[in-house]
Amino acid sequence: MKPSLKAEKPKPPAPRSVRADAQRNLDALLEAAKAVFGASGVDAPVREIAARAGVGIATVYRHFPQRSDLIAAVFRREVDACAAAASSLSREHEPDEALARWLRRYTSFIATKRGLAAALHSGDPAFDALPAYFRQHLEPALQSLLDAAVNAGQIRDDVEPHELLRAVGNLSIASGEDEAPQKRRMVDLLIDGLRYGAPGARPPLATRRRIR
Image (cartoon, rainbow, N blue to C red; front, side):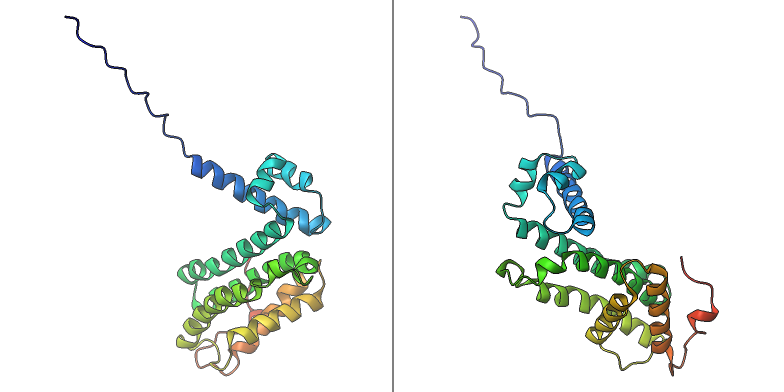
């Protein structure tokens, strides 16, 4: 009697990070959307975003069936990145310098937000949750930096995160869209004001070498 031949089970495909590939596509798509929205506005053609990301239009619509979904995702991604920068900067720099660098990083976020402003203020219900998302992520991130600098005696202790976010936002808007050096200068002056009266404050930024 011949031994029965058992059908071999098909071998699983070689390990391939499908999820990683999908995440890379998504990251490229959001980065492309941010750039296109900043250059051409939020009504830019979807095909322009897809081409810049190196993906098909179907991929865009698979992830974001509505344009508002894409705009909101770009906003949340930028908030997340800005919030995450607080912890990395605090590990790498003195508290007051980490705060200064983060506030400069925040001006870059404001530039992205300005590119999305027309949509974000359109009254579309798809964007209703974004202001709370902004506050819930950026205010705690900034609070951690403020607390560290206060505890080190490097800044005054009577500043709230929402006050500082608004102040930097107003300075950035007043400086204009293409005035990066001026924005940096205004933020440096604001940080010098935070140092005023602090027991362990360092010399004003205007008298020190600028951080690149």
